[in-house]
Amino acid sequence: MLKVISVAILAATSIVPIAPAEDPTAMVGAETEQRANAAALARLRGLAGEWEGLLEWTGAHTGTGKVNTRYYETGNGSAVVENLTMDGVAPSMTTVYHLDGADLRMTHFCAAQNQPRLKASQIDIAKGVLNFELVDATNLPSPDAPHVYGLEILLLDPNHITLTFLFEGSGKRSKEFIDLKRVSHKSSTQ
Image 1: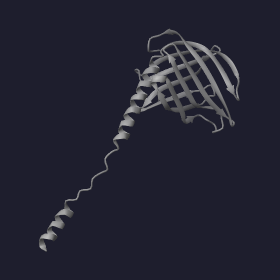
Image 2: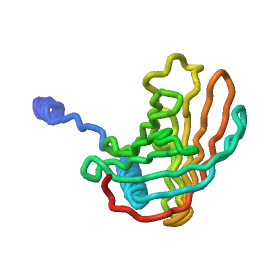
Image 3: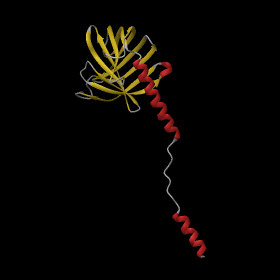
Image 4: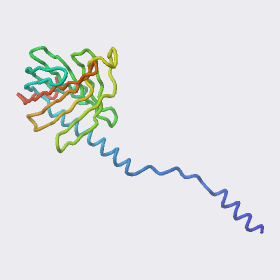
């Protein structure tokens, strides 16, 4: 009887709680996402130079115009700046693309005088697709004030891209479609 009790005590004292193992598929997914975000920023760096094209508003806001765009790196290559000049007003809007940890983010300095901050929600490097969704905005007087809530980028080839800014305000939505073609390559810095 004593032997049985001592075996039970020994077994009870040698039990060590084991922390649950991390899900290996989640780790692989996070690594894949991090690589996709870094690859997307590298593709954006490749846009450095001068671009020109046309813009077209649809939805609650309508109109067309010409646009010139300049891309360059800043922050020792950690960010890409996009300056949009619409109908000769320079720059009308500026967007800064950068990594935040593993996430690809952007801050859009809008002509509406607010600063929506967006995070990449879809990246397909093979198809040249980069989509962003709103995280929050600074200097937004009310949630109903006009602001960008999304951006769809299509990298068609090294010399042709499209941007579709998704706007909302006062319960109405608009899209600003911009079709850009490269005019010249520039150095990667301002």
